[in-house]
Length: 109
Length: 113
Image 1 (cartoon, each protein chain N blue to C red):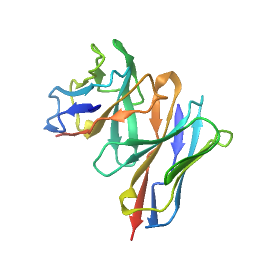
Image 2: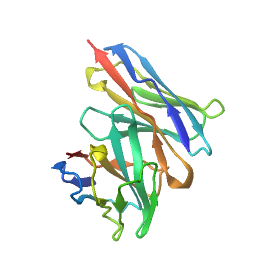
Image 3: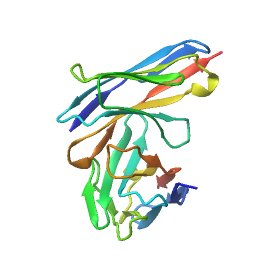
């Protein structure tokens, strides 16, 4: 199976930078996803890392270390609209898919 | 417009009354999946399908059935719903499999009394 851990909730200030961490344990590794989910809405794709290192996409970046079973999502220049839950997720064995329980990010003025 | 649709969006029912939640995608995706989302537990996979007539259990399949007779449709069936199936349900699809980006439907909020 899969074990994916991430903090339950974080608070940050508008304009700041926040890092959301995720650790995972897998029986086989097929990449690590981040999804964003606003309250009452469906998750939407943010990033997918297969190789070690940092991938930058505008204000959002995602980092992966396969040897450490660790990833983080970095959000820069925080905006109020970034208040949402951020879901760390990964494919598992036999084409299954697993999500962490999500990190609720509160952005305050 | 490329999308995943689910119906109904909201449903209140009673214990034991069979129900079906429909899911349809217009992107010709092969992989489709059902998840339930509960507070503190996140999204958990119920069933998934790699293609027509190929379905497999996810992590929490008990009490649910699915079928994949056509590529675009992947209905979720609750033969005898119970209160512990009260949840928010999402259908999702991706191009080939779980290593591709999944696109989610808008969700179905189910309450079983």
